[in-house]
Image (cartoon, rainbow, N blue to C red; front, side, top):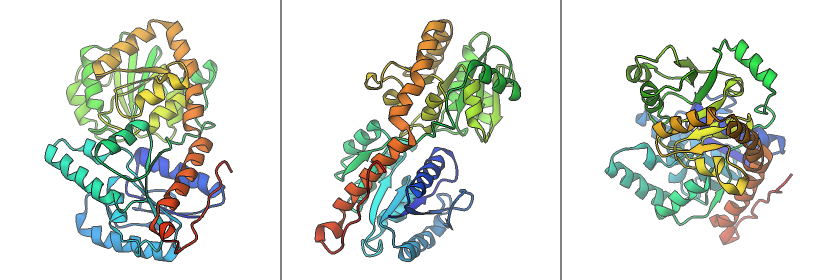
Amino acid sequence: MRILHVSEPVGGGVAAYVHRVSAAQQQRGHVVQTLAPEGLPRSATSWDFRRGAPAGWWRGRRQLVQRIGQLRPDVVHAHSFFAGLPARSLGHHERAGSVLVFQPHAWATDAVESRVCRDVIARWECFASKRTDLIMYVSEDERRQGESMGLRVGGAVVGVPVDLDDFAPQTPQAREIARLELGLPPGRLLVCVGRLSRQKGQELLAAAWERTPIPGATLLLVGPGDVAHVRAVAPRTFGSSLRCVGAQSDVERWLWAADAVVQSSRYEGMSTVVGEALAAGRPVYSTPVKGAREAIVSPKYGPPAGAVEETVQRVLTRVSWTLDHPDVLMAQTAAASRRVTELYGVHQVLNRIDAAYEQASRASPAHSAGSETPFRVRVGV
């Protein structure tokens, strides 16, 4: 099968998602290309389409049409709102018979505060869904939100792929070695992973920590971005019990070193970091963003591996209580990797994606008209 991934973000969870999925698809024998801005590793073709440069959007659309004409993919798989704009504006003839799959990775309506903007985006999603063969979701919460906006196109929940070998749980001795190698202080250690941004809500977490830091604990913010907002809301603890360590290429070691992982996001589709933390055997304490309850506490996948609380302050309160009850922490730690194996192993996620492509093929106009022989994928290869 020929697959063209179209991706606008140059970092973060979406980029990690595209990397893992495309690599796994290549291992299954598919021909996989990626159209993305410069700076996204493994990109086969650079794309002049960036959310901050609207003057280049039309040029980026032309590049997309040209790339489709050259590759003639069976599937065009667009990731996130901005990459979906040009992809879902294409007529079927411009797609050269390719089926179009759109994956929001969190709905753009969550990213804006203006009600007018949310309404405009929701209207666009309803319109664009008519040009989309299938919407692929990373969580059931994300699917339900799409349905609530009035989308009437087929959908498939596939989850987020996590390399269970790279993020495998470590022995206590290996965890202590990781702490020493990273130069971390002794005592309790909490880690929050993600770029410093409004979406990830680290300034909310820092402000809550400033009010009620957990005694004897250190909170590490791991990820790129400007620390000014964090420093501004936590002048007393910043640099002591609250530290920003910047972007790290070996996120798994920071997760292994932690006693628990804290996520303070304002919105998500399903956080990749949550899946990685659970795979590393770390319990996660999160705000109630989409996918969090499914991944962390849903009884469908066994005992809870952390907690989901309504506010960042309550997240810290729950973490503090759990750290004072080692038996509870141990039980949640044991549950973490068991949950993620069923939910987000790369093999399981790729099987769901293959099945979703098959569903998209059946929904495409070419299939309905009988003008082309639809491709077939083998699930479970």
